[in-house]
Each structure stands twice: as structure tokens, then as C-alpha cells.
Image 1 (spheres, helix red, strand yellow):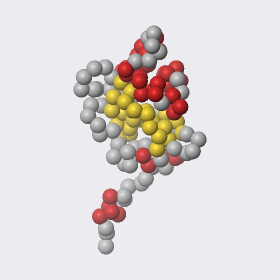
Image 2 (cartoon, one colour):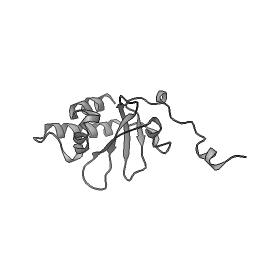
Image 3 (cartoon, one colour):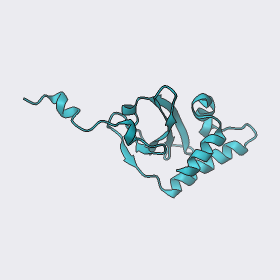
Image 4 (cartoon, helix red, strand yellow):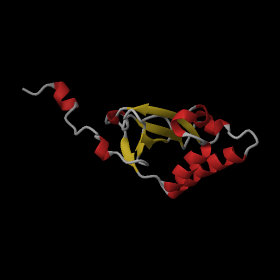
Length: 133
């Protein structure tokens, strides 16, 4: 007899071999939120950065930085893997460059990156990572 829980977890779970730095997953938030794999921490968790491309108001911005287990990278199977287009990449680069050039060395759009420097490093580190996507 098949149990409902067996059907829910029937799909192949994500493994470390399936994940590459730079992978992008569309989350189910409002607007167009894409979760990027930034790197792997020393304890084996993955660091991810979320970017909101279509906020309800204002400019696109970095929404969050997080770390979690392998299964959490794609939101436990709820997020679809996507490819970002050059226009989206340019939006991210422009957001970072504007923040770096500002006299405050940051902006509202990059505030989450500045607060989580321990996870992602400086804005320049994130900028060079985005350019490699």
C-alpha cells in the first residue's frame, strides 16, 4: 500500500553533486525572486543570495542572504531551477556598482549584503561573483 508521505517525497532529493555555485532557483514569493547559490560554508551548508527583480515598488534589490542544508537550496523541491538572462545580470551589476560608488559604500538595495559580510564578504566580492554568472 502506498502512503501519502511516500508520494510527497517520491522525487529525487538534491545532493551536493547536483549543486553548482551560480545555480539559480525561482522562489514562490511575490514578484520575481531568484535564489542564487553563492558558495559552500566551512561546515558544509550552502550560502544563498536572494534577489528581488520585480518588487511591488522601488528598485530591484538583494532580499536576503542565508545558509542551509543541501535540500534547502531549492526550497525542499518547491523552487524551479532557472537561467538568468543578460538583462537580469545587468540589473544586479548596476545595483552593486551604484552602491559601491556611493559615498556611504552601500545602499538600501544592498543593505542585506553589508549586514551579512561574514557570509558573503564585501560588495566587491559579490560584484565579481555576479559578473561570473
